[in-house]
Image 1 (cartoon, helix red, strand yellow):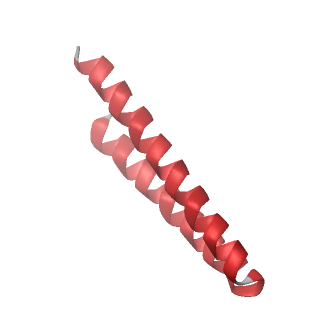
Image 2 (image 1 turned 135 degrees about the vertical axis):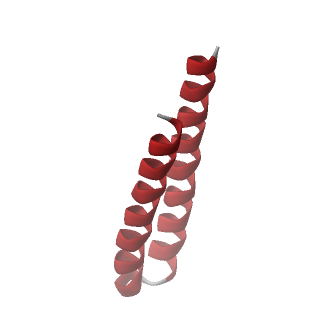
Length: 59
């Protein structure tokens, strides 16, 4: 049961992170093309860090 719960939480965390990153990226690119690209790159990097941290905590 514990492994199933961990897998579920990892999947939910990854899904939420991807959804948030997509929303932020879309908003940034629609508002300002020049600053948007730099902002998106930073946001994606931070989301990757969050996913890695969650995986380390659970696994």
